[in-house]
Length: 412
Image (cartoon, rainbow, N blue to C red; front, top):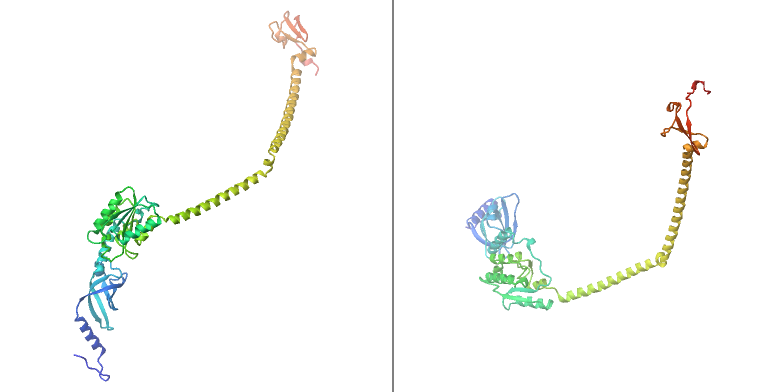
């Protein structure tokens, strides 16, 4: 029944809020569909808040959700379409309308995105996305393996851009379905075939843009593992810049478009020729500068006195040798003369002390017949014959008598 009220008889605010609360809560819990446009996780709290927006109308509400319900839904990135089991209520304290979420499930693309996110996390945990395992692209591949749909725009873009950039490039194309249930298996088989060819140095997997469902084969786990097992570098050129299938994460290089893939795998011949020309000019300039520098250094050396007159150094050295030779000769002569003087002095001393000098002064040396020197009267006896040796001969002397000297009576 409608309420009656007037300025004279207004209804109490508490009654209006109570009635609104009852009307709202009679709706009970209901499943609603909306797009997550904001998620506020409150650290240390069990209650968080989602902002849901209708996918067609400009209508949005804030929904409270506990940690267990939010975690059970899996990753819910912003933009995910979800089905939320919500209960509306009115808070009596301030009359605000609030929604509490009792269950949350990704729906439509959101369900697919949540499933893909779980697959990404599992593959990442195995190390399939490790950037350190990515292989470098060759500078100029011998052959380019191309996996794409037959007569597709992606095939045309890759081939035309490769030919334009490097006309001599060799492209080996393997056609496969790029959409549908059998697409992932056919693409994986084509990738493995290209990897087995020894002349193929790089593989391009190319497809144009499409919806999330169209690109699902390129997030297939079998295809991802086949690309990871390749020994040949793989370039993923799937969709447009905003499309990110799991193949992009495991490939050695991600190209934003098929055209970009062509630019990645072969150099631009015109640009390389320009770089070579610039290098040649720089090399010529460097060689000319080097020759000029060395020429200047040579001229500087030739201007030095020793090179202007090479014999000058020999003359100076000869003069020095002559001077040193003279000093050496004079030193040797002085040393010889000094030694000669020393030898003469020593010889004079030796001669002064020799017995011959004593004999020259009129003394004689007495010896017995057997050659023993007579130094005392005790060495001879009367009637014994001794030999007196003089400067010019020997005299045989007979001993008549032996008489000792009285030393005490000798004059001092």
